[in-house]
Image 1 (cartoon, rainbow, N blue to C red):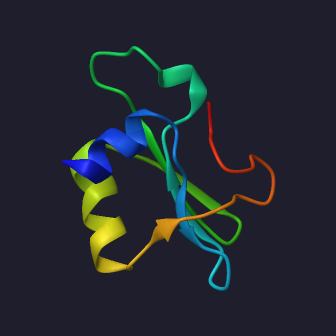
Image 2 (image 1 turned 135 degrees about the vertical axis):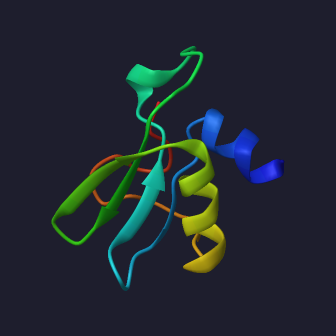
Length: 74
């Protein structure tokens, strides 16, 4: 639940060494079913909350700073 709330507040999870990031774009704030983004290198994919939480857990992603967005996506 903590990670879900952090995602909804715009916290970016990632690993700067592998260039992997999971976050909710600012345009999704307030949406009933927001879309999240998974970035891996130059690839980007839209994912749902369940997949975002799974990737954070499986890939062991931590709150981090995105190279373009900074610390939050909102």
